Amino acid sequence: MENLYIAPTPSSPEVDFKFDARILSLRGESYPENAAAFYGDVIARLKDFLSTEQGITLEVNIALAYFNSSSTKMLFNLIEALSNAAEDGNQVLLNWYHDEEDDTILEFGQELSEDFPAITFVTRAIGAA
Image 1 (cartoon, one colour):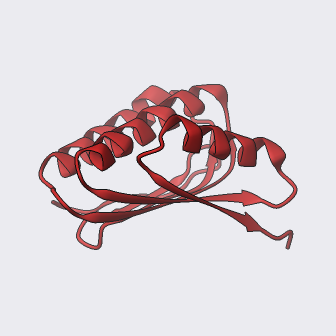
Image 2 (cartoon, rainbow, N blue to C red):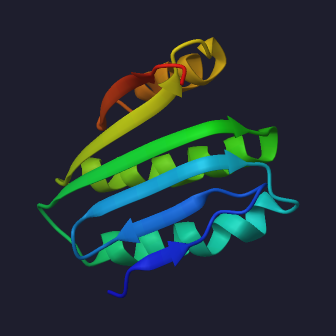
């Protein structure tokens, strides 16, 4: 499957899905005007990839400094697809990066780890620059 790269904008994250290396990354801020439109293709491509894989290890890196409520729903859908893959026998490691002073993003990651126990969640604090 062809890799997926979407350059970041001030309101949307960088999407770097290296399907060949089995490393998926989201970085930046996420408050696009239409989160469903932005994430719809990303999630569809992810689901297509996952439907062809069995017994793989997938590394997911999410480092979002900010995301709005509509992005939250789409992130939930993306992670739900990853959880389904994990329940189907794939290993999914999700590195959840957050600013060490941002409890909101940390707590959202912790909630996701509780909601999706099939995924191995690792929270990683990023120090202030």
